[in-house]
Image (cartoon, rainbow, N blue to C red):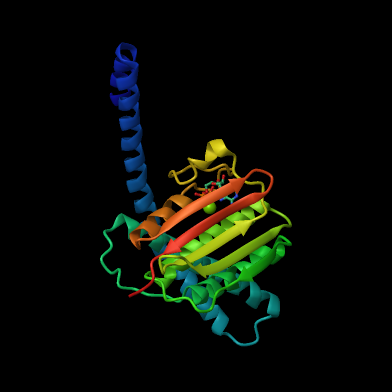
Amino acid sequence: MANALAKYIAEKDPVEGELLELLAFNEKMAELGRMAAGVVHELNTPLSVIVSATQMILREEGLPDFVREMVERVNQEAHRLSDMTKGVLSFTRRDVSDHQEADVNQVLREAMTLLRYEAHKRSIAVIEDLDYRLPFIAADANRAKQVIINLVMNALQAMGEGGKLFIRTSQNGEGGVTVQVTDTGPGIPAELLGHIFTPFFTTKEPGEGTGLGLFITRKLMESVGGAIAVESTVGEGTSFTLTFVAAE
Ligand SMILES: Nc1ncnc2c1ncn2[C@@H]1O[C@H](COP(=O)(O)OP(=O)(O)O)[C@@H](O)[C@H]1O
Ligand SMILES: [Mg+2]
């Protein structure tokens, strides 16, 4: 219906036609968003079963090393998925509890415990340059961790095999805290750079990417009064900069 109308008007008036198409597109996006929130909500129950069942297995004594290692991984990944679902759900609600604070270096250490193995598997060197005199950030530690995991996973996936991942924390001019995640991957072509924060935009194979990571990441950053910026050079790499407000 909206499409037929858009088509009709597009023939009469190209500019207005385009606007209508955009409107129809936005409606579709909103509908997709609602569906995604529903799906994500449904994922929570099976995920918490996986988390607690693997925790129970890990309490057993005398597990073979290999089994323990693999079950630990399943447990960590299920935790990560569960954090992710919480991230998606948290921005579909209005956020009221913004009086949170976190130590960004501690958040990074926890995120990197999970990710170092992923980097190692891909022969990617992780180089950290952390400023230890940072103020606490005004953000929930788990959400900040999710944001960092999203960026680091994107960087690792972009590099594939080999390369360097730089993680820097510093204090910015306005008393806030900056976290920079830089990779030596293929970079993002200028014509795609404007689209990477759009929901469902992905250059990955179906099943590998959802195109929701950066969209969620930006929403999470905005929900704590922060920001995310990107710089990229094809053939050199990509750098994402997160800016957090310092806690009171
Ligand atoms: N570090 C990076 N290097 C190169 N491309 C990137 C990087 N981070 C994100 N991208 C691009 O942005 C797209 C969207 O990222 P994201 O929203 O996390 O979704 P997904 O990872 O599911 O594709 C990716 O498919 C990729 O094309
Ligand atoms: Mg991603």
